[in-house]
Amino acid sequence: MNILWDFDGTLFDTYPVFTKIFRKVLQDDTPEDKILERLKVSFSHATEFFQLTEEQVNHFHSLESLVPISEIKPFPDVERILSFAENNVIMTHKPRKAVQDILAYYHFDKYFVEIVAGDDGFPRKPDSASYEYLHQRYHLDFAIGDRLLDIIPAKKIGLKTCLFQNQQQGADYYLNDYKDFFSIIQE
Image (cartoon, rainbow, N blue to C red; front, top):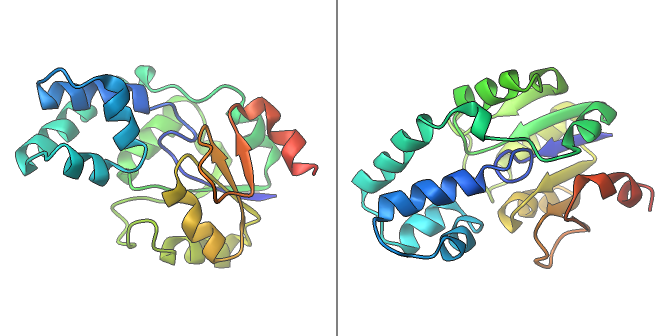
């Protein structure tokens, strides 16, 4: 099985860190659950909704770069799936160096044959160009993401899709926990 993965919120539980940083940048008493709700659509959506200035967006990214990698944890049981797959690839909007640093820290880099990162020049999701590129190279079977934005391009190119910790309609499968992955692929 060849799997395309999103990174933030799918392989790694980054949203708690992102939510705290976003709240710090907002400098108000917006509840974290309201920030998380907007971030789960997309970072761009959240910045527009909360009307962040370019300076605030830059401040967010500078604070994000200071977060120790040890605070960015992989989801439980995700490594079992990575080791099961024949090929794993990542498509993320995150910069390549940040992805590579996190993967290396957890020794997950050995599981991925290719990464398409935010600074690689592909259009942003939900455009399917990066998915098409990866599918042509690796004959992908499955795409896993935590947002509709992650599965729309996968559906467009004919992949089976799975939403992780998200029940929005549109995916072929839904998982709240990776320990249940093997039961859905046997269906």
